[in-house]
Amino acid sequence: MDCNGPALRRAILVSVVFLAALFAATSLKAQTAAGSLLASAVSQADLAKLDQRISAAQSSGDNAWMLVSAALVLMMTGPGLALFYGGLVRQKNTLAIMMQSFALMGLITVLWALVGYSLCFGSGTLVGGFEHAFLRGVGVEPNTDYAPTIPQLTFMVYQLMFAIITPALITGATAERMKFSGTVLFITLWFLVVYAPLAHMVWGKGGFLSATLGGKFPTLDFAGGTVVHISSGVSALVCALYMGKRHGYPKAPMPPHSLVLSFIGACLLWVGWFGFNAGSALASSGLASSAFVATHFAAAAAACGWSAAEWIKNGKPSALGAISGAVAGLVAITPAAGFVAPMPALIIGAIAGVVCYLMVTRVKAIFGYDDALDAFGVHGAGGTIGALLTGVFASRAINAVYHDVKGNATAVGWLDGNFSQVGYQFVGAIVAWVFARVGTLVLLKITDMLVGVRVSEEHEIEGLDVTQHGEEAYNLET
Image (cartoon, rainbow, N blue to C red; front, side, top):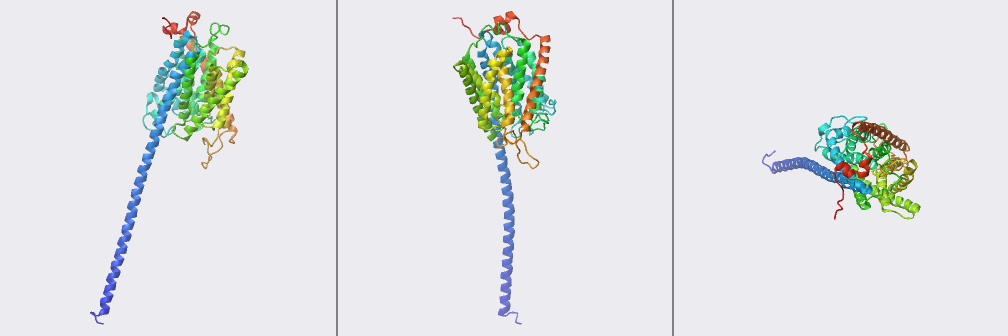
C-alpha cells in the first residue's frame, strides 16, 4: 500500500473531520449542561428573592392594617364610648362617666404590660402563664400561634384595646352612683380574675373553649361575643343588682342630658367596630373584607329593627332607639363576623335589634333592676344572641376553621351541616355567664369591704362630677 497515496490522504482527512465534529459536539453539550445548571441556579435564586419580597409586602400590608385597626378599637373607648355614655347620663354626672372610660385607657394598659398579655395569651388551659410577664419575649418577630404575618408587638397592642373597652362597658350599669375609687379597684380585680382567664379560654393557646388552638369545647368567637360582650353585660347586671337603684329611680325622670353627644359617640363606635371585627382577621385579607361587610350589614339591620319595633309601639322612632339598635347589632355580629355571609348578618342584626329593644323596654321594667345605660340589655343580651346564632349560620365558605384528617374543610355551623356547633356555642355562653356572674359578685364584695362601691345619697344627689372629681362638665356662667 502506498502510504503517500490519495487514498491514505482521504482517510486521514475524514478522520480529522470526524474528530473535530465529535469534539465540537461534546463541547456544545457540556456548555448546554453548564448553561442549564447556571440558569436553574439563577432561577431558584430569583424565585427565593421574589418570595421574600412578596412575604415582606404581605407582612407590611397586614401590619399596617392591624395598627390602624388597633387605633380604631381604642377610638371606640375614647372618644366613642365616653361620648355615648356621657350623653346618656344627667348633666351632673357627665365628666364622671367619661373619666371612667379614660382612666381605664391608662389603668388597663399598665396591667396589660405587666401581666395581662401573658395571662391572656400565654400557654395554659384556664389561664395563661407568666412567660410573657413584663412583655418578655414580645418583639418584632411574629408569634406564629396567633398571627404569623405581623410582629407580636402589633398583635399584643391590638388585643390590649379589647381589654380596655370590655370593663369600660360595665360602667354603663353603675353610672351615677359608683365611687371612682371603687371603680378603679373593682375593674383592676375584674380584669385579672374575670377577663384574662375568659380571654385565654376562648382565644389562648390551650384554652378549653378555643376553636382553633386545641380546645375541648370549640366555641366560635371571632371578635369577642363571649369574651367581651357576655362577660361585660352579665357583670353589668350583677353590679346593678348589687348596688341597687339610683336615688329616685324609677319615679323621678332621668332623661339623657345630651343625645347629640350620644349620637356622635354611636357613630364613632360604628366606625371603630370595623377595626374591632374586621381587624380580628389579623391580616389584610379576604376574611377581613367579609367581616367588614357583615359588621356593617348587621348594624344597619339592627338599627332598622329597633326603630321599627319602637315605631310600632310608640307611633314614632327615636334617635336614641336608632343608635341603641345599631350598637345592639354591632354587639351581636361580633362573634359571627368572620364566619357568616352578608345575608345571615342581616338576619342576626335584625333579630338583635328587636330582642334588645324588648330587653331594654320590657324585661328591665318587669324585673325592676336599674341598669342605668342598658349595658346588660344591649351587651349581655346581644352578645348571647350573637354567640348562639354564630353556631347556626357559620359557614366553611367564609372561614374554614375545621378540617378532616386529609386536610379537607368540614362543616362549621348548623346550616353548614354541623349541628353540634350550636351545642358548643351554648356551652361557651354558659361558661361566660357563670364565670362573669360569680367572679363579679365576689369582687364586688371585696371592693365594698376595702373602699366601698357606692357614693353617699348626698353625693349622688349633688352629682359625681363635683363630689368625685371637683369639677363640672359645663360652665354655664355668662
